[in-house]
Length: 562
Image 1 (cartoon, rainbow, N blue to C red):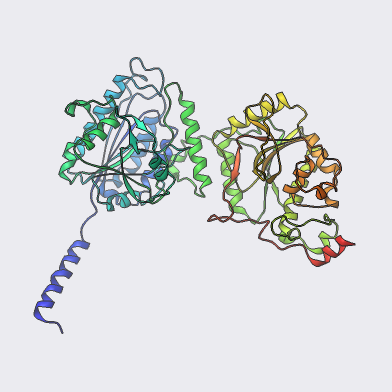
Image 2 (cartoon, rainbow, N blue to C red):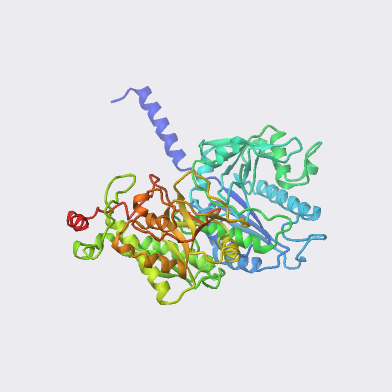
């Protein structure tokens, strides 16, 4: 039993709680301006659809004009499919506009007319959202991929007037500025890198946010926001929508926040003034590869997938591209196959020799280097290392049997660097021009010594390879395969990433090199590297099939000592 007063208090509290739980989510007005985005629209719209927020509480305002591609047909098709799901969709598709603005020299060139049109349109959308009594206004660029379905809920819960999710991109580009110069342009600061790399995790007041910005229109101070410089008293900034919006906020003491607590999504690098649309396609490819590298797969609804075109596959300048993969690692195989589709690579998958299936009857046919011990763990070879060596060995045999002049060998736990195909072309062009007698070129490796590796004379992308670990990716010539096989490594076996440096005479252990008197492999390395591991030792998600295996058995070691 409770006292009358206590019961009254509890009933009021419970009544309020019940009422509060029945509140509908805030309404959101999302505005998107589209121009020549047909290549990314299927992904943009797919991720927009998958946002975990009641669609009946969302209104969309989509405008598109000055297109030279299929942006408007894609938008029309999508809107017809989803119109009934959203509270409302307002569209303005102008096919009659010319493809370019007066004086515009390319898609990355911003003329005054282009800026004026953008600022007026964005300001109109903000005004329209207020007229519709929207609770929140989201300005969302058509090339932002919000891969995190919880983005809207996360931002709304911050209870801030203006806030943006930090977006990933190539290199160190993102959708915020941490500093600004006296004349209102971008200023790189130490704090920018700390936020970008998540050395500090929170929501931070910054100098500028753009591309995906949420505004709480319920707050009275939001009435001071504008994208038009002519609406800002004594405006001194550049003729730019983003800066005008930022200054309208800062001049009215409204802070701009960027949040980096989660991975929210991605944004491509904007075009430079002299770029053409092919650069935009390349930036999208880099983002898609980064999504795969992070262990995700992009979301693409069935109705939009028909607008995505994959490149025609080839093997670049190589006779063959091989990828080594354990059958039980189907997840890695699938990810790599998606990478190959995006990069347009024709690849033969080699079923790796699985160390876990090796037994003593098979191992009796191999001979191991008598004085080998792992340099760090002081142990014999592991079964996984033997399987790895044999997998590469089988490819070397294929090179000779098929008379391949050059092949690219890849493992299944790598990530491709941005602009991979272009970089491969640059590296191999230098190789053929400067070192015609080459044997092996590392595309991915771990440099094991601090001593300098000299640049190949006359090269911009090549160094002479020193003692290296990993066989993530390398190019092998026929002469290189011949040298690797002629040395008869199965009679004095060591791990493959110890064997290669022995053959090009850069291994630090002289006693090991003594087992291979002919060490004339000509080995180079791309600089910078073209592939890296998806995970490093100790990182979340790191798995090593070579380390996660048993050492060779005592019976094999007895044979080895006889």
